[in-house]
Image 1: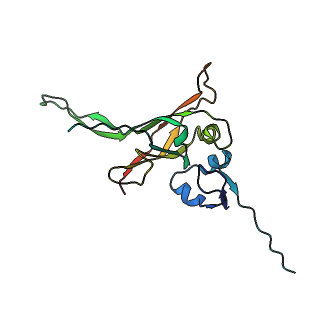
Image 2: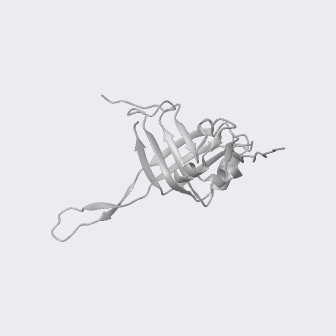
Image 3: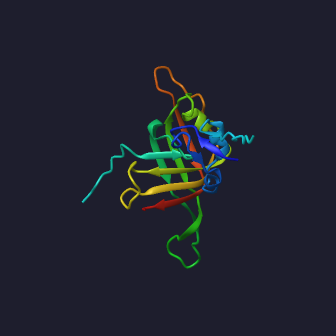
Length: 49
Length: 136
């Protein structure tokens, strides 16, 4: 699951957040999501006609 | 020559969230528990190192705004996280070391701790974890 930064306190808003690397460093990713610091990156739809 | 350090601009990051501008005090306690190893024949007590028992205490101004103090801290209770503290917000160096406490447990939080006429603050104690010091 990919996340984007949603808070200036965490980083640059809109940047991709590497949740796996953060968790490896002991960061509590669910708490970041609960606190509104991260949002799930919206899945882009492929439209091929 | 004696020197004193006046920390006016330290850096405090809790769970990767920079809460420096909400923080008014921070203390790192780096401790190795002492185990007594005194034996017959000794004339003074001896100790050896036991488990490390590190702790970080911080005081934060309370804020219920989005992505501020309350939103950042509330979900950390009963879990472990990582804290990074530096004496200054400038780059890490030998004279501005970075201290990272990984796996620190937050036992409690006071979402409301208010007194009339005073700014509301939150005092947090993060227990345990591994402390690492970096100078580069």
